[in-house]
Image (cartoon, one colour):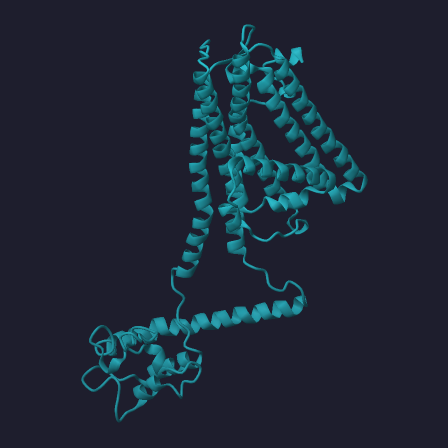
Length: 439
C-alpha cells in the first residue's frame, strides 16, 4: 500500500479523474456518430423485402421492371420533347396562368380545388386515349382546339404522339431534383446531428460543472489527523476492483469452455468489463491514497470537531472528484454496448422503447435516486458477469437512457457536493472552528 501511494502513475492505481472525463467525452461522441451512421444506413438501405424465392423468377421480374422503366422514360420523353412545347405554343395563351379560360390550366398536372382550376390530368384517361377528352377536342374538326385564330391545329402526326403518350399511361418526366429524397436526407441528418449538437452542449456543461467543483476543492483545504481511514477505504476499493477483474476473467473462461466461436462476444465483453470495473475502483482508490488531490492534508493536531468536519469534507470532495470517473466509466460501457449491438444485433433481446419515461423519470429525491440507481447498477453488474452481458447491453442501448445518464451523473453529484459543502462550512462557522488554509 505504501509503495502504491508513492507511485505517481501506475496501472494498479487506474487513471486520473480528468482522463476518465476525456475518454468519456470521446466515447459519447463516437456513440453519437454510430447513431448517425446507423440511421443513415437504415435510411438508404431501407427495409429489405423478400430475399427468398426462385432466383430465376427474381431475375426475370427485375428484367421486366427495367424494361418497363425504360419504356416509361421513352414515353415521358414524348411529353417533354413534343407535347409540352406544342401546348406552350398553341394552348398556354388561353389555358395557363391567372386568366385561364374554362377553368382549365394545361401548364399544371393536378387540379387546384381551392381555386376551382382543373389541371391536365382531368382531361385525360391514362391508358385510354380514345376516352380522353383532350384528345377528342384536339381531333374535333367542327369545334377545333385551339380555336381558329388562336393557333395551328394539331396535325395527325402530332395528335398521334399525344395519343401514344396517353395510351402508355401518360408518364411524366422524372424531376431533375428528387425533392422527396432531399427531404428524407435532411430529416435523417437532422435526427442524427441533433443528438450530436446536444452532446456538444452536454460536454460543455459537464466541463463547467466539473471544473467548478475542482475550484471549490482547491479553495477549501481540510485536515485529517491520520490516514488510516483513507488507507482502509482504498484497500476495500482495490479489493473490489480485483474481485470484479477476476470475476470477468473467470466467467469469461467458463464461456470459453462452452465454445469460443459461439460465445466470443460474451467472453470479450466479460473480460473487458472486468478490467474496466477494476480501473474504476483503482482510480477511486487513487484519490484516497493521494489525498492531496482532494486538498486534504494529513497531520496531527485536529480537535474532535476538526476531525468530524474533515471526514465530512472527505466524502463530499470524493463524490465530486469521482463524478468524472463515473461519467467516463458509464460512457465507456455505453460505447461497448453500442459495439455489441452492431456485432450481435440479432442476439440482443428487443426491449420496448422507454425514452419518454426515461426522460421524464419518476418523482424522487436526489438521495433516493442515487440509491435506486446504485441498486439497479449492482444488479446489472451481477447479470453482466454471471449470466450474459447481452440483456444488459439491450437495456442501455436506447438514446434516452444514454443521454439521461450523462445528464444525471454530473448534475446529481455536483448537487450533492454543494449540499455537503455548504453543510460543512455552516457547521464550521457554527462551532467557530477556523478553517485551516494551508497550501
